[in-house]
Length: 182
Image 1 (cartoon, rainbow, N blue to C red):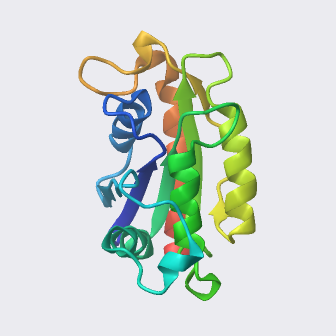
Image 2: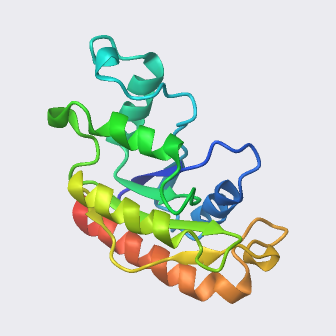
Image 3: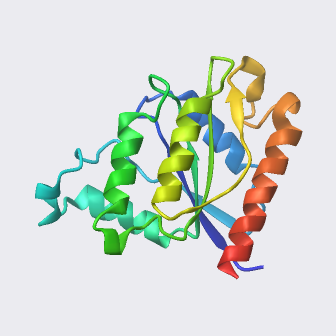
C-alpha cells in the first residue's frame, strides 16, 4: 500500500485546544501507511484580494501543505453555531485564486468536539456546505462528538466509549482517501 499524506487542520487557535487533543488522538487510529501533518492556520493574515499580488509567506506555506496532502481531516470547535473565523480564513486562502483552489477534488472528512451535547454539529454542517462548494470530496456521515473527560485517555488515545464509532468513521475516510489516490 502506498503512503498517504493526511493534513489535519485544527480549526482552533487556542493553545490548549480540546480539538487539537482530539485530532491527535484520531491520528492514532490511522493505519501505518498514513503520515500526518498539522498545517498552522493561526498566523494567516485575514484574506484580502489586496494581498494576492504578493502573497504572504505564511499563506504560501499553508497552501503548499494542503496541496501536498492526499487528504484533509478538519477537526474544529464551533463558534456562535458556525465555523471559527481562523478556520474560515484558512479555507478562503486555500480557495483563491479559483484556478489554484487547493480544496478541489481533495478528500475531506469533518469532525469536531465541544463540551455541549451537539458536539460542534452546526460548524460541521456549515463546513460540509463550504467544502462542497469548493469542490472537495466530503466524506458522508457525521461525527459530532461531545467532549467529556473519558473521550481521550491519559495516553492520548480515544477512550473505549467512543473508540468503535470513531474507528469506523476513520476507516471509512481511509477507504475514501485510498480510492481517490488510486
